[in-house]
Length: 456
Image (cartoon, rainbow, N blue to C red; front, top):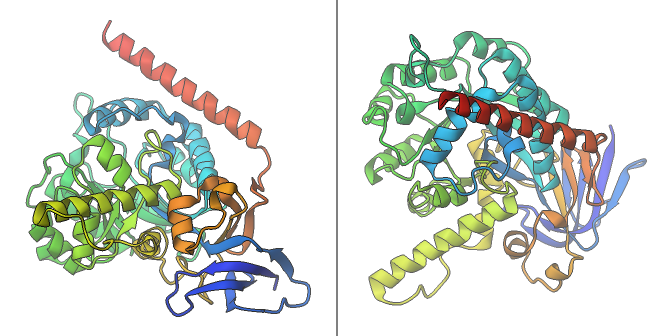
C-alpha cells in the first residue's frame, strides 16, 4: 500500500478530539488518513511532503454549485433572481449541447480543486437527455474531484401541448439507469443524488413522486426554496405529516420560510445550504445562517451560481461569516442601542460550515470534512509564505479572513495529489480553456439569435 507523510505543517484538523497542532504530521496510507500527530515516522518507501510554513487542513466542501454554468462566468453578475431565471433556465440552458455540459463540469471541478475544494455538491439541473447527464458525470470523474452529483431536470418554457416543468416529476427511467448503472457504487468518488423541485417549484403530486423515488433508491434529495411564492404553499406541512423529510433531504436557501416551518424542518433532520453572497445579490432575503444557528442546526454553505460570483470557498466562507456578523450587530443595536460586547460567531465556527458541516449535508461526515484517522485523505496545504499571511496568529482566522485560492499549494483527494507547488497536475489545460471559451461563445450566439428571431 502506497504511503505519504505530510511533515511539519500547522495542523488544523477540525476534529475536536485532535484539535490544532502547531507543528505536526499527517500520515496517509492508500486513500485514507492513517494518523495525525507529532514526529510521525514515514514508512519505508513513503513519499514525504514538506509542509513547513503551511497550514494542513481538510479540503473544503462546497454544498451547492451549478457547475454546468462555468462557461458563462460573469454573465449574471448584475442580475436579480427573476432576471436569472428568465435568462438562464428559459433561455440559455436550452442551447447547451452535451459537450457544453461536459467541458463546463470538467473545468468547473478543476477550478474548485485548485481553490482547495475537494468535495463538490454539483446541482446539475440542465439534463434534457441522457447524453447531457453522462457528459456532466464524465466531466466530474475526469477532474478527480469528490462529488455528489445531483441529477435535476431543465426548466424551459413549455411548448404547445407540453406540461409546465412544475408538473413533471423526476424521470424514473433515467434515475434508475444511473442508480443501477454507472453511479451505483455508493463508495465511489462520484455518487448520485437528486436535484428535485420541491414545494417551492412543483405541484404536490410531483413533490410526492420525487421524494418516493429518492427514498426508494436511498438517495439524497435537494431542493431550492427562494423568495418567490411557493408553488405548493402547504407542501412542507404535508410532507412532514407523511414523514418523508429527514437528514437525507436538503433545502437550498429557504430564506423565506416561516419560523414555525423552519423549526419543524430542523427538528426532522432536514439540512440547509446557505449561499449568502448570491442570496444577498439576487434578492432572496436575509440568509438563514443566524436562524439555523439559533435552532442548533449545522450551517452548511455553498457558492451557487457560477455565472454570478467566484466560487472559491475562501470567499464564500468569508462573505457568509461577515454578513451574519453584520446582522447580529444590527440586532444588538436595535435591541440595546450598542454593538455586541463579544463576537457572536468565530472564524472556527465559519470554517466548520465549509468543512465538517458541509460533509454532514452531503451524507459524507464519516468520510470527509476533518483530518480524522480512518477518513478519506482529502487534504489541502495552504502556504503562508505570501506577504499577506505573514505573522498571522490564529489558524482558523488565517484560513477564513486572510488566505485565498492563490495560497493553496497542495491538494489531495483520496490520497491522490491533484495540485502541487500551486500547479494543477493536469495535462491539456490550454485545450480545456479553448473548449470552454468556444462553448460559451457558441451558447451566447445561439441564444441571441433565437431571441432576435422571436422578436422579428
